[in-house]
Image (cartoon, rainbow, N blue to C red; front, side, top):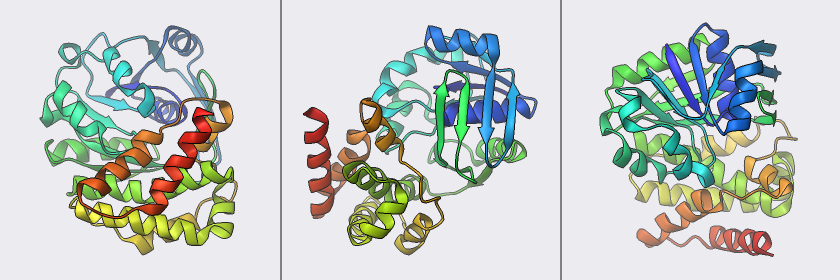
Length: 296
């Protein structure tokens, strides 16, 4: 497969490395400095799950030829600007799989590209970019879920086979809304609570478990109103599978002084709650507190 990865950070860099190691042609799209570093040195992955390896990945600042697959793995805060690196006319008929946090990006992608080439994707992993092309993969798992209301299922299944052969546990589902909101039901409590309290997931699931479960219940209620099916008990059980020292990407961004994906996660949750008249007091408080701290 000929693949492009837009945003070779913790998630994108890991997937670029795994796909390249499996023998696929991979081009990572990023800014000039990162693209040059990747072109020169490729990707090095240090992983509990996959071991340590280095592999060649091409680097460029924009897509210059059609690809079969384009993985969008940028932060939500950089999403709109990053899409300029993938012109629709150059992409051709490639399948676009975003692995962003939140739910609002799907509409934007279907406006820019043809709906039939857009698939929703979510990933469960802890992976960090230490430097351009250097990826630290901390979780003992890498799980991707795919679904699409507009792209043919066989295209998703073809991508799933490629990812699975590269080592990524991948499943294809029929319900796009449920895939996106199941991830949101897990992500919102993890991101908001770890960031608000400055704790890894182990601290949240013990010292703040009641707050975690209350926020999960709010998110599941919004998800249901949006037409998604979310198993709140299964999501809650996922927290106990994560290594205690796992940090959310939002907490890592807060610690590093980077922009937060607060609107993509907390903002999207609150917009859904308001649209459907659902009370979400825990989410409202946490978003307000995190926003005030970031602004101060």
